[in-house]
Length: 207
Image 1 (tube, rainbow, N blue to C red):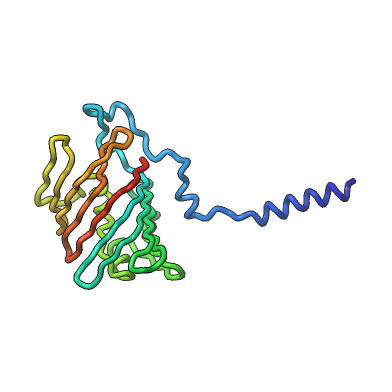
Image 2 (cartoon, rainbow, N blue to C red):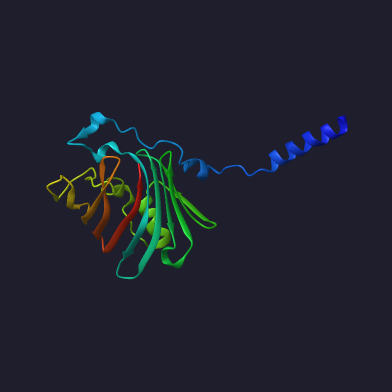
């Protein structure tokens, strides 16, 4: 009996040791955690300002073109506070999955076995793919907000939604909004500038 008990315990320990451990990426993308604490006191006329949203997950399609190439990709963007994010682009330039991840001020680009790091996501993506994507400003534009810095023009509709913006060398148009948890967020965004045209269509927001 003691021998059988020993073998049973040994098997349990072996199975535990062989079980796959969650990767740092899986831990980063834990969907069980609340992304924001949205308080009723943040509401104005029944809506919460998009500035209250600092973390989110969005899924959709993104496409772009310049004088040399065009591309499109499925996008999954997980943002955890102002300084940490993970952006997956599936299928740009006919490839597999590109991952742009920022932690502790360092941006890491991963494309299969290729891996590189920098403090500037825009330059890192341009260097390895030729894609010009204003990642830092998109943290604001994606929520229908002006980014920090000079603004040449900004227009709003009767619901106080930002409809057009000229900033940082881009003309940005917000053509559709959706309401998620009492927050109005853009569903379609078009950017034109820096010799690049970009269109983002969000199919799903999670805040």
